[in-house]
Length: 216
Image 1 (cartoon, rainbow, N blue to C red):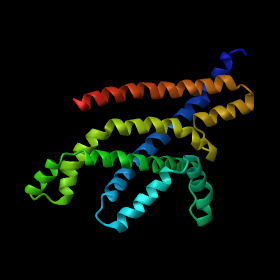
Image 2 (image 1 turned 180 degrees about the horizontal axis):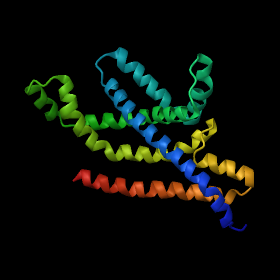
Image 3 (image 1 turned 90 degrees about the vertical axis):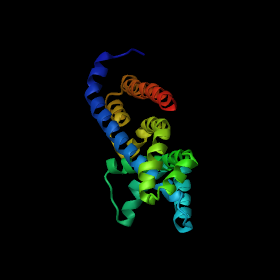
Image 4 (image 1 turned 135 degrees about the horizontal axis):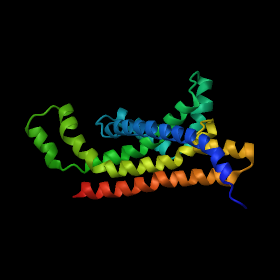
């Protein structure tokens, strides 16, 4: 086996296109996961069973089924019911929905970790419930869970190649297409592997530093 630098040069324009798609799916998916996760966490704390139980059942179902199956369902089954999404939109929604069930547990742990005295102080001040959540509870809860949320972003990054199966040309998709056309597999997949390490490892170090800073 001989390394072909010309093949690397030929692949790089496609790689940059795939990297852009990967980062776009990651950022949008993470934002969706953060937003939906907070919604699920608040719903799971609802005093009403008609709200709490369906959300608990739905999040457990999503959490315990493979992301790949969910992507296929969103992309191939929903059109049968009249809802057709682009491949990119499906990938973002699939990633965001799947990881929202995990971020919901992170948010819930953060909320449970807020000292009871904070709730009592808000009650003593007669703060409205919405203001209590917005100005007292959530700022403290989110600060506690930032490192855990960051870990799920890294996990999502490593799951983004799955969106290739529904036709999204991310880094892996570009590598697969390049390899199919040129039969040069080593160079393309090695570049993609190095790219994932280059993205995830510094992010892990940053999260560790952030966690140490927040724990002080």
